[in-house]
Image (cartoon, rainbow, N blue to C red):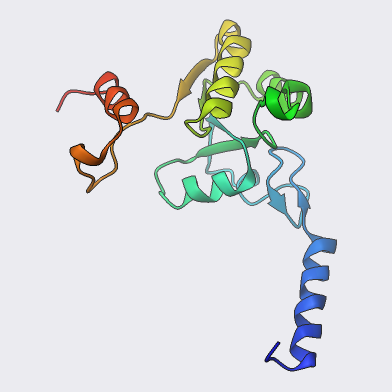
Length: 166
């Protein structure tokens, strides 16, 4: 309210320009101004790895780590029977078609560790597992710098299950 009207007008026009130019990538359903997003059009990315995420924002979170160099597929949500969202409301059909066309060796399911994320991961594992594509899930555990006495029982149990040799 303290800014001049011209600034508000400029901001409104910028928002409308984004709305007009930005669309979904035709391959992974991320945001882009072109037919393919920068990740899908990057030939240096590892085509044998396909990471499935619920929303576009999840791609940005994973990309900030610089630890993943594969490709992505955005489902557009998670299975949530309470909200009336099943596989038909997500981009599961497109994922199956993409797996058949591109032949990745591993599908990394990177959904949140909540009821909806787990249901979606289990569904995808059962659907895709028989095809021979290796289906993996992000590990669970303790945050770096965290204290054991502040961790909940489920997180500690998952950390114990996922332990690895030093």
